[in-house]
Image (cartoon, rainbow, N blue to C red; front, side, top):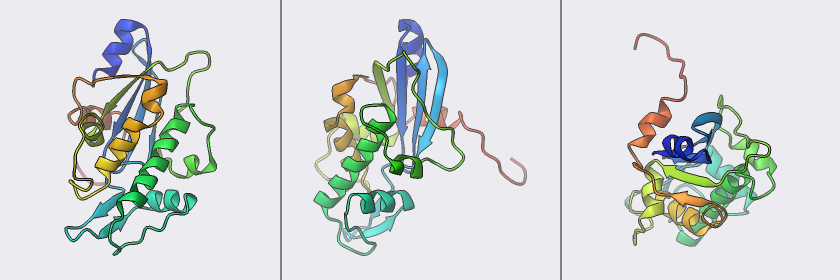
Length: 197
């Protein structure tokens, strides 16, 4: 996405949020060096919608967030745009908590991806710049009239982030790449597998 290079060239504290289908990977760079990283179960495919406009899948994380917000989202129901906008607003607020805009809630710990490191901010070194990459980044930077264009909540999540406090509190830099940057982000984590590779 260019976040590491920007951080190095400007001696700046930068966070890259790589928001894909199932997770959001966060990496904090200070002067180009990785100081913190973590992963949250927040992404565009946490809720999927079928061609009939019904909810086909709800992840455990999305269910937890919906219950916290007193939202009724059930598999097989017609997808309600306003309800799913509220869900995406809740996801956005959890990202804001992670970056220190709001006080952290107990829910934030529950949606951390199993096995990931806990993301933390550096004391005395405030974050000034954000980069977004991943599939949802395209939905942040480009508006789409169809809220369920990809059969999920990616468009709504992108809109919630664009309208939320992340864009107010930080300077958001356009990335060099959005989706292609995900491949680099995925390489930051070690995965244990069985058999040969």
